[in-house]
Image (cartoon, rainbow, N blue to C red; front, side, top):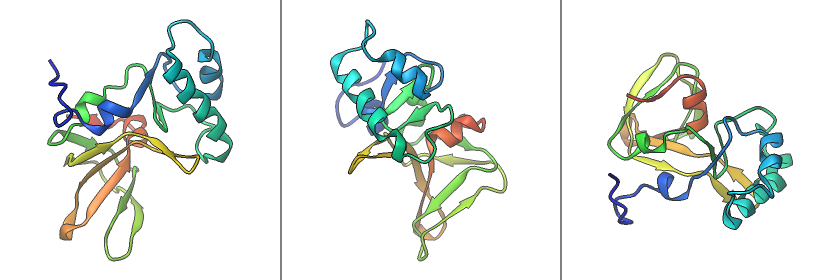
Amino acid sequence: MIDATPARVSHLIRFQVIVPVERITEESLLSLIGSEGICPETEGTIERVMDALPRHAHAEDSRLLLGPLAAAGVDVLGFDRGKRVRIPKGVAVRTTGPVAQTTETRRAQIITVHNAFAGHFMHDHLREAVVQWAGSGGYWKQAALNDILVNGGGPV
């Protein structure tokens, strides 16, 4: 049972919107608009995502997460603070080191989640859901949750 007090529920659980599709594509989102069982708030979020799609570089492929939307079956509970997550080989990882950079993991690694942030809109651009953990030297690292899941990673 989830303790639903705001201090206990992660950002990812509170703000990632689950939609009833296996993969998020432009066609699957279009099919949801106006369908039964979709609340007006979710429909509004889907419409905002659809408006932002032309500006989003990775929107043409099928995804498990896109901005604030998550496909059905994505377990966001496994990414709470303190949980252990497998980051597969080949996932792009961003760091906040002296020179902020993005590198691909050369091997799979197990990390301990510090924060998981839901995807959102920033100035009409989609931002991806990310998992953040402590890296070496006191710097933070983060990776897109969609990349982790698509490449076979996830909670351990």
